Length: 366
Image: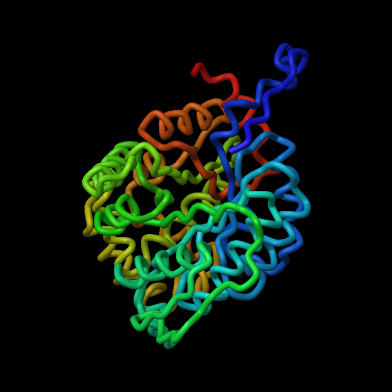
């Protein structure tokens, strides 16, 4: 990653703190539901100007297509890393995914990171696509790496049946790193054994992240890899200098969408050592039963999500996110870095809102 050091004058001016340290921070663009992809351009430019090291896009069908929005981001920025967190192997043919990632790597001048997710089986069942089993994830990674190396690939497995696929016109760039989004132990181990990095889930506590990093590093070492070379991206929801109403929307409502995700919720709660019975209370609530299996963020209003958040202990939100003054949030982000993450990706607050946090983070003693 390119590190942009501030000049001598800037580093001695209180209004322009040294931004070298903030290169270890990134932020999501278009978090949650969004219908206007052009907003990502202004957010990415703001993040780069503030000194963020990376910006990330979580793909959702409609207005958050990684290929098209990612292509725009490569041309409106010049140094910030651009990551997908995440897209998936199943919706695109492997040849299309490999081509997309390599093209974005070329357009960005080597600044792209391909983040791959697992999601939940219910989603893939509704799409008529296979679930993201460990074999499918490893196969998808291997196919892409072979295609990027110029090899012709013949394959039969969960991703399909391919007699012979190949990238005929490859740009002269190094392939992008591929990171896996992970929360459960098996996914974390998979990332350590095979992928270039791992993107951890939001609402992990500092202790939960410490345990996750240990799983990743140990799996990499057991596989004979350089454990330190597997890059760990922590993810932290941030609400700095926010009113209680803003905290409700940025933190509490967002958390409920994860706590209501089958399988994922149980893994997240277990990773933090929290009490699983609170998830049972959520599942029995009339607002949730009326969803009939639909995702909470697609079927409920923000006010409904905030109401449901009161089913959970307050410490789930304070321990799993960064809430408070800009200085308190900056200290909290540093805690997550100290707990083993190489970088932190901020969720919930978009780049144009983060200047006070970045100012405070730049002042945190190394």
